[in-house]
Image (cartoon, rainbow, N blue to C red; front, side, top):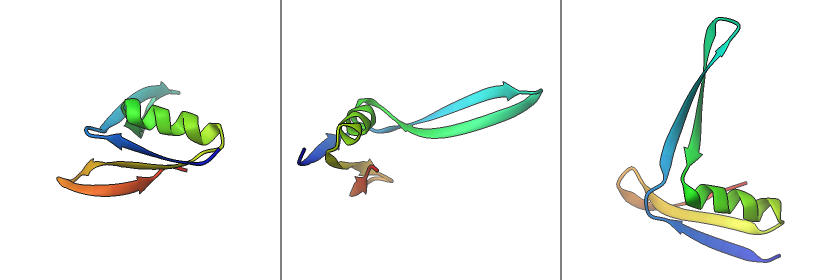
Length: 64
């Protein structure tokens, strides 16, 4: 598979808090449809670059 660029205009940060043996276990992950599409395409063998607005400026982000 070739190279793919995904434009995600509003990526989100997901926060998950789990109870692990009485202690809070906190996970931070990139979220949103663009991220899931990038992950799926990477799993299929594509080289994916995800572009979006991070910290108020256009930036590129490589999903591995």
